[in-house]
Length: 269
Image (cartoon, rainbow, N blue to C red):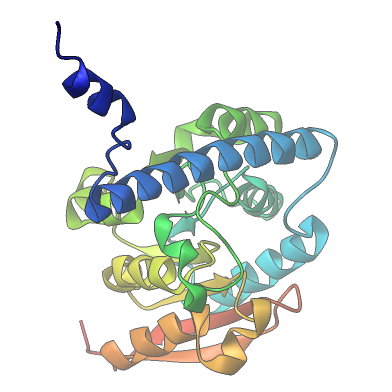
């Protein structure tokens, strides 16, 4: 007589439950995959809206602001080159296209345009509650879509560079050297998060030679500035870490934005 009790018990044995650590790891992987799928879907939807004429920035108001800050820099520079235009958080390219149009209309043909973006949306830090209402993957745009948008806007690719990657990887001294970044004139901080804005500002610090204008697109978003968070926190810390800089507030272009003329004190370099 065959003993089948062992096999019968095996059939009745309850399924093995993975260790708690493994469950947590699997859950984390699932959340990341879900967030990636969601960001791709939302990014594609947003790109279709842009193709239909939607813009994340008020183009006319921003162009007026760009003209104002360029004329202010020209008045103080005394004929010296203004420096490069640096943008952190390019997304589809609307802000860069606005700057290109205004500079062209003012006859400025020597400005270089350098944009930094992951082209994968906001980084994982966006999930932290103190960073604001955003989530990782928000404002995703493929590099190909952005390049086509800028091409259609008439961008001069001989003077334009898009640098792809997370800021931790791209905002380095090696990047400054490789792209011969020596002087910034207009800096657009449109990366939303405190952590990203702080990295961008630290990257720009040695590029502010005499003066530069810094635009913060989401300074007041979700009441962050009133709570001492977001881009305001990043800028406050930046000024504290660089006491040779002084900031003068200029007129903005939306209720969420703030614009500052930053000067380096004479003899501090």
